[in-house]
Image 1 (tube, one colour):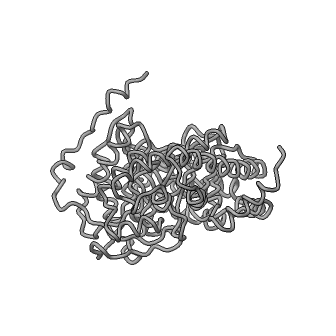
Image 2 (image 1 turned 90 degrees about the vertical axis):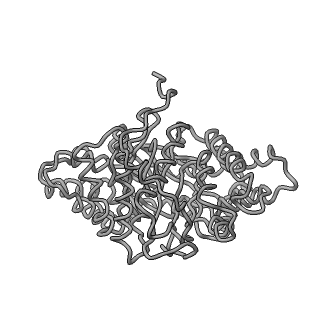
Image 3 (image 1 turned 45 degrees about the horizontal axis):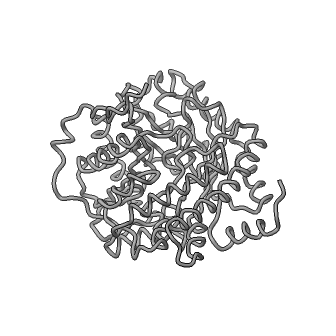
Length: 453
């Protein structure tokens, strides 16, 4: 394929001026062969398998970064949900498994490792319960491990027993990491319809239908899209959509090139290209700023959900034209702490938790990186999760909750996490109780449109 000089210059401009990067190259590794009744034997199997596949991951991605001149911000690993791997293990506490994952991630030189996970949308096995009950200690005693629990699907409904349990687990995780603002909760996400090929943390895990070893790539370009939109002169909404599609096309092409080269060098299969617009705390690298460039005075005002729907749809259309391997989440992320425009909107009063929930009905993920007061009851956290799971279940889409009840904080405080996690303004929750509803347990049945067999 002939590459024109102007295309090279355009890419250089995107990288140098508009925060274009490969957000992550994530290696997915199957641990299904690592199970063992003895936890020490299982941990040794897990460590050896991860190092066998991922030992050259960082060096290889650094070489590709230098070859193409495109920043690759994170190198990550995702593994088979540990609840599945450890089902036959006789130990009742799986914290040491998380510590093994952390040691492997450290020795491999990657930024994060995901897969301390369980899939419990229809019920919980003993292995699932061991995993979930180990989450607070696991996240408090590790630095690179990320955890996720899928509690709902369109086909199965919502496992409200698991939702109630996760409300308590989130509170306990916040308390056990209180010296760092409850940062353990920033590495814990609750899902509906979790994808098995997501390269983004904290929700990445290697699905049971995936190959032995795979490379998934997550690209990011809010700054590029924002710059492209701001260059338009008095555009119609159709013009805006076309501009976003064309920009997403270019970003996707770049990501696929990097992913396929990484897979070839690492002797792995190339999996998916997740073209999610994932913001950073950097000025201008913001999904909120994209929405405001469409004509909204402040993100969160009336019209925000419609603008986000346009953005998400256009990103998917542009990416789908550029690659036949688009997967993961793919769309627009709206994490509050990681998006300087979202933080600004919360602080000026235009963006509330209720408005964010409405926005999640049309975007790629859900209520992401949201800090709430430390005294928020676990039943309220569970109710927030339940609402979001309902949106995912009914709309047949992935939704998630990553909420942080930051210890010893009140509304208006700021919680600092650093790096890509940014800083989160503490947002108010409703003062009225949901405890009786959450305590009823059971399962919210799947919607009638789930019967599509």
